[in-house]
Length: 296
Image (cartoon, rainbow, N blue to C red):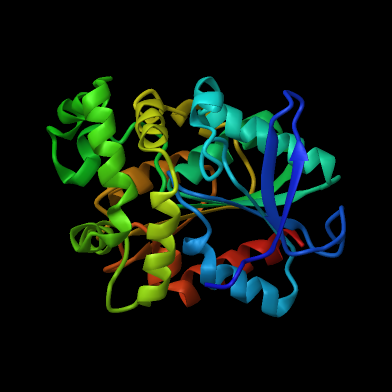
């Protein structure tokens, strides 16, 4: 797959080198249109934004995506204590301040919704609007897979055993070559009839490059997530997007997000799974553009 955006890097205040991608070569984004910030989901790369970026590039909308700590550079042990939603939002804050981004529109997918909301709560004056795709305001718990006992099974994932970690990491890193893993991505995330195999393979390649312990740590972080009360303080244009066949963040969670965001729009996509911007790119991207027009 071709590269999306221009890859750049900077040193954060703690000395950590962080990478991000932008649509613009300059150090600062253009001022004519608000900068759109795309926040990735749990252990995701840029594959799920493929159609969104292609559209933005074609009509000249400036965007930025940043690579979360511990994801693609093999620095899990170095970053272990700083792999959490708030730290990701803090890193993003440093990046946006460094490039002198005045106002932004935040678009988060899945765990990227968590990062988006943490940034919004920290710097509300900089965020003009938000689009929250396949996200949740609380720990998924018993909603996960629409299975009420799911929350009781998750602790098995958190058992810190060297043998378990070795086996799981090996399975994780070879998932690209496992047809069962490919099938699982389709069942949980995308519609195989709509999404080209090249995009799925791109996602799987990115996934395999991440340490399995990053995934475990962020799932554990999700277990303590609850921002319902904070959402009620937000009063900016907002879009919530959810698919009726999403097993990871089922529709009741999307509805809860919508009901607690004052004046938010709610786009429900029949038949869509966890990645509607890939399953139904024209519909989702069209609504993101409509949101952008409201604040431009």
